[in-house]
Image 1 (tube, rainbow, N blue to C red):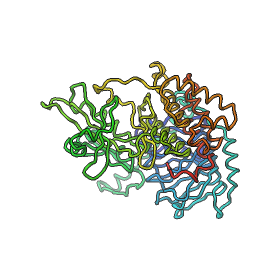
Image 2: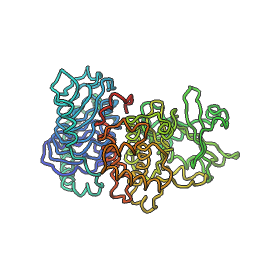
Image 3: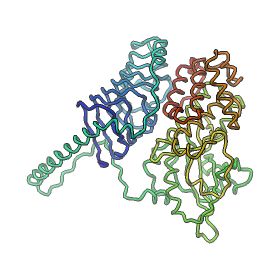
Image 4: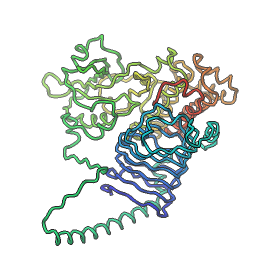
Length: 565
């Protein structure tokens, strides 16, 4: 089953949840059109080239990680009942040529100056709840966009108020179910799929055997060469991935596709980093935390980088750290401070590693906390930062297996790049626990029992995010757990009060900017994230949905926000 490339079960009578297909890592074509499957969007591998889920019963939101399917060329999810935000980044996937989301209830704000894949051939956005302007980049594609609320005179559109009312009427999906529950609900589908696949494979083998005999008899030993199918990509490597990373001579597909705007992960020489930091001079040091000293450096090509130096407490050779670098190289996301490479510094006798220098992208606008306290971010930009943090958190949990949980997220670890995009700079990697640095006192966002963190990994990070969101709303540092408890109670009371009471809680520098709906949505979400009962906290997917929903109903979104994320 793991070698399955094409799974086509269209126009049958299958119903129920689609089983977890993530383990089918070689699957490239998935066609489930015309069944009764749903309601949850299936869990899929990001190596798919073609996905057709049209005319089913999927009614929950589109998973955010679909924007990391860099080989995807065809996506058809039309004629379902999907709700939640449509991520415009699907239009700019590097390989996409066919996108059909028609006949759903997807919301979202489109911009005239958005970017799209120039190779797009067909786009169907019809019959959704989209607002804003049709992107100019779609002019060369065959585009359908009727029955939305777009500001266009060329096609039938509803008033913007219509989509807003319809969006408010859509029921917000509940927290995601566990994979175990999804498998039990989709048991019937599993049986049908297995029977279909086994039957198809059996018939296929018999047919191949028959054709082989005919071909051999007619053509003898003559070799027949046929053209390869262009859109089925086969990238098999006989070189061990670990060795590729260590030698820095080969770059895996994951590294190439992780972030298009970043250079490939590689090994740096100590001479490069010494020159970049002027000999690791004290003037280049920009921070020191629980995971080592951080230096600002400039590479030979002019690229600014942040270099984190880890003092290793165990005497091990370079091979011992290869697995850590494999994981680090995969952490490529637009809302993570991504690693560009590493460098070893050995003991004088070269018997073992004394230091590891990790090279990261540089965030030129510093910490999110400084921009909030310095009144540099308006309300829309703060919502954008919260959405970015959530997307980064979601990638850490679901971007690869196993996910990275219990990240002890703190607002000090959220940095802003040159475009004020929020990026998470610290995550729970085993490599960081092998340093000799002392363990710092736990912050307000992480004072939870170890049992709670182990049993509710995603909810632990949701709580940490709640503390960050609290500071985004009120505009002042939240230092202790008492601060969290008192502020949570005040927010809770404000939900039962009027608009004026809620605005009095918000940061005075921006309290007049938000609509009451968006402010109330974020306050309600923050209270849920900070619940002392993990089961009550929303899932990461629900957090993202609510934040994007709040952003969409913010009337001044388009006018005030220069950000596209």
